[in-house]
Image (cartoon, rainbow over all chains, first blue to last red; front, side, top):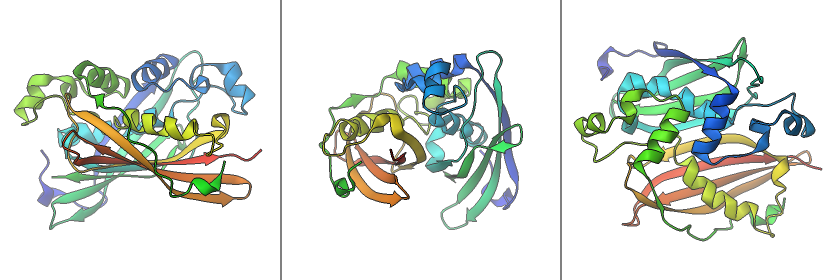
Length: 138
Length: 144
């Protein structure tokens, strides 16, 4: 468990990369029950104007908080977590898309011993989430 | 979609029992660390069972959203829906074994140049009727 007193705004507390492949999308579809074909069928994705298959926004959101869970050591300490989906994450039929997550302290509340962790999730140079923030209890 | 559904409250969903293996399956799908799928680790932290990944309530929210999407009054064409924003606000952690129901309110519907932006607030309750988590979802419904 990190020590609240040792944290400062702007400090990077966690960083992790994830390899997202079509297998990951199928696994997430099954686990979540979101079987929208834009997440596994190229022809269907293109028919609705997408360049190809894209990852579930909720998969990107779900994995982006994991470095914070590992840092804090307990998912129960995440009190509040929100994101905006700003850019789609394309996932090709072969290979994978590397999503990189950087978690930075955005604000500290001394009285409640809570920290706001701001997340930057990107592939190559494209940031895919906006205002991705979680409040954690220390 | 029909902007007149703003303020509409949908009926409480049937109880959803959070299964331990479902939590593991979901945790694996969101690349959670192995530790978070370990029962003895959860108990060592003082939890009665596995704690769900922070975004797990989407599964319960989905049951309430299905009521809106199938509501003829709402007139939402699902093929035109894009997920704009999502938030989860916890009152207490959700653990395997919890039995949860949800109730959705259409918080707002805004029109933006032919598109609609609707915000849905799904309150999730336990068997004691205590609020456990609120899932807030903003969907963008693209115009014709």
